Length: 68
Ligand SMILES: [Zn+2]
Image 1 (tube, rainbow, N blue to C red):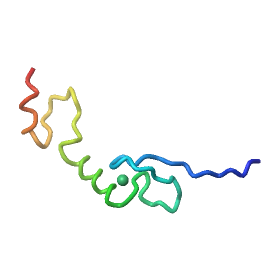
Image 2: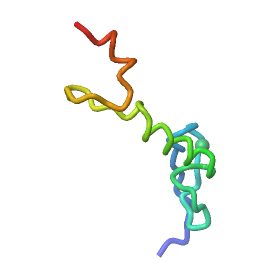
Image 3: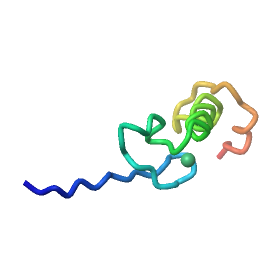
């Protein structure tokens, strides 16, 4: 058995910073609580759009230039 226990690093989805994937890091895969909240906020806002779906998202203002 090898004893090389290197921590796994993941990239923070918000800022792209390397985050150690350890139990102590309770914000993983985010680096900080702030990044987690930012990502949550973007997900809940109009950034979470499903292309091809005709239903209106919460914000319709940006879809004006979507007319082909
Ligand atoms: Zn981050």
